[in-house]
Length: 286
Image (cartoon, rainbow, N blue to C red; front, side, top):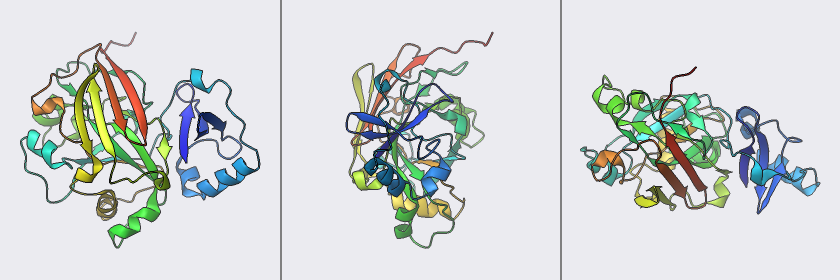
């Protein structure tokens, strides 16, 4: 199944994406949120679909695409999870997962414009596989238990400001990760049965020029290991989002320029969809 949320920020309609149709889910749930994902959501949606209770959204193509999940309680990220990216960053691949956090207000629609922070000279892109939690996870006994706690997968752009992350960080990466809108997400939440999650191609482009091109099979720590490992330190709640790291090909590696106002970034993961953002200059609020 593929789920999306369409409409203006704060007023998105939850929908089931069924081929070319966008079916209104408001008879089943008010939103694609933790409560919905913690329920038997696939069975409920299937029953409503079979009963003809999901009308088509007639103007779906004209509506903004929001994040396919409502604001999560937590956005937890794994750093340097592809060996080549670790090396382009000047580090050896980690032996245990590296953890940092993004704030919930970073999560926006996949095609929303992204504001370059005030004073930024090193805003960067990162295509990433996102994991959405569907059942509370704490102290899992093994990586194999992770599957029962995953609602689905999304495309994410872990936008980063490298000066804030590395040079004025105080040893913590999150300063460079938490500007509003720094986590375009979607267009879809795709359930695990739809994809082979450890065999998905990830790509990014800037102004139409190729940047990243890799595969989730190159992860150092796979999805199950990540969820199990995190559960030893944090209680994962339904609707929470985990970003699993980015492959090589970002500006921080030194081969490409950082983003400037007017640049357009495209992000894509096989089976999970495509997103595009224009990067715009920061302006003081009136």
